[in-house]
Image 1: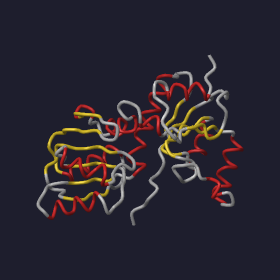
Image 2: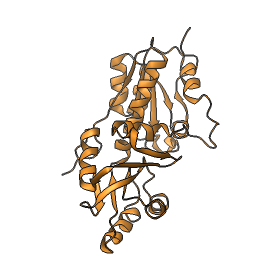
Image 3: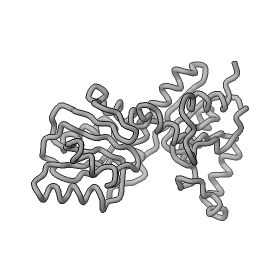
Amino acid sequence: MTITFGTIIDWLTAGIPVPEQTVDRLETGTPETEVRGIVTAFTASQHVIEQAAGLGANLIVSHEGIYYSHHDQRERLSQDAVYLRKSALLAGQETGIYRFHDYVHRYTPDGITEGLIAALDWQAYVTEHRPAVSLLTVPPMTAREAAEHVKSKLQIAYVRAAGDLSAACSKIGILVGYRGGGQLAIPLYGEEGLDLIIAGEGPEWEAPEYVRDADQQGRSKALIMLGHAESEAPGMKLLAERLAAQFPAVPVHFIRERPVFEVI
């Protein structure tokens, strides 16, 4: 059987109701194109596109958008040199890019959150998966120890942490990507009795300020921000493993980008 871009997309989206106003689509290429190799990545960066070509892969499954916005707004970049070079690279390589964002977040459990929990080796501690958060009860550790565990397991140089880092933590909430905002994160501390939230990112004046006030009041709450990519890339790595198992005749690779920020 010929495996095409459409074959892969149909498998990725099978059984998931079509999200309203979804950003998921085949950004470049056609569904009929035969797949020679697949790359999964947090985003189809210049580096990822170049690496995919070197691996002989002609389909990139990218969680985030190609051109620096959640919703495709490439028309505003029509005269931008960086955009023009990147789009020319894609056109020259005839690489297909499938944006895979909304569907994977609607897996049960959320496919991106599941990947992060697996990378942390905390699958056995999950007490409940919800659409936007997973709740865990882990063996007691301090928030600082949790931060060191996260850094070690994800092989990242740093995280940002707020609150009482010496307090014991057991009940933890995992929120990937941009789910670390106050509207979602703050109620979890009270309603679920969480000691610690580990999130990708969110507005700095919301959940971090709540945790700062909680610490000032003597309430032992903590927050660890991993970074958006750092929280979601493990989910795309897990996806690569599942694609490889489902389509053993197709070479599948996960490409991990270097951190976008450097701490100076």
